[in-house]
Length: 165
Ligand SMILES: C=C(O[C@@H]1C=C(C(=O)O)C=C[C@H]1O)C(=O)O
Image (cartoon, rainbow, N blue to C red; front, top):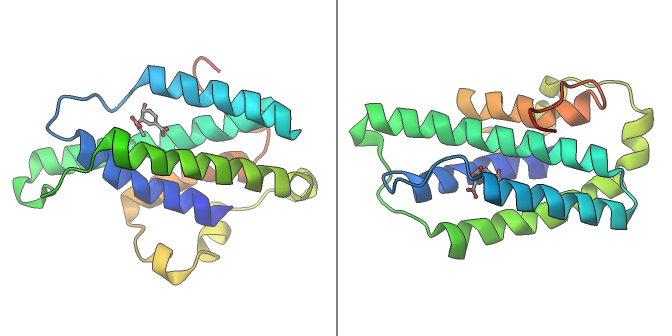
């Protein structure tokens, strides 16, 4: 599960690139709402607690926006670091996020029982278990996002509810 959480966070770089300089806001409440509704529906269908599923995905969204905000700030302040290409958000990046959503729901289902009985774990432990090729791509910004994204897994039921949850 940590693996796919890290992959979604790294994909936020592409989202940030797609939006940078276009005027498209980092926050897209319509897209978020449709994701959360789809997750609640599918979680219920798959027999995962919809609340747990929604809580998990709200954390993934927040983590994604942490990376986007951090990169937009970095690029605004450092023109030399700005990306040269702009992926297509709708045609390229969001379909990849949608694939990850399906995979994450599957993993949530598979790990449900284990997570219910597991002792709270630390983000550091989960991060240390990542394959090296993913770990090396996580700088301080991505690690900050990873900590937010993993909170529902590490501390099920203990993380504060997101606004509007
Ligand atoms: C990833 C995007 O940016 C934000 C983060 C989202 C997410 O993590 O799923 C969804 C909508 C946006 O608020 C996007 O616009 O697709």
